[in-house]
Amino acid sequence: MKTLVAFSLICVSSCASQDNTSPCRSPQKISVDQRCYKGNGLALTASEYGTSPSSFEWSVYALKDTAQILGFTPQDLKIKINTANELIIPDSLATNSQRLIVTVATNCQGELKRSIYYAFIKTQSATDSCTVWQPQHGF
Image 1 (tube, rainbow, N blue to C red):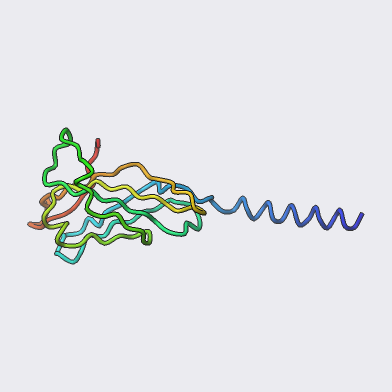
Image 2 (cartoon, rainbow, N blue to C red):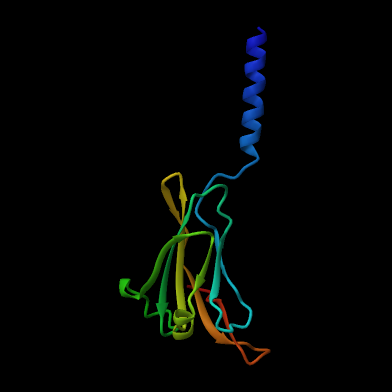
């Protein structure tokens, strides 16, 4: 009887601890650094991905225009890398592109869980005379 009670307590405590964590899942958000772009790399950050992914697989497509109707092709893929939840886009790519299409996958115990595609465009700031990157809505 004592063994059964002890086993039940262990099960209850371990089940309760599992409920306190969010399982590893695809990133629910990719954000871009929206401060004035000064040529020091462009930071993209994946978030809302649960717990303990072993790595992040980023795919970045760089486009020379912002038109949504033109789409993108495999030839536009410029970065495909496994790294952390933050990726720094090199200046050579950020400077020469007008639009970035980005997706990221979390590696959850060997299974890749991909985010949706996000689009970011380069524009002129409304308040300053500087270049900023911002999300392109309606992509």
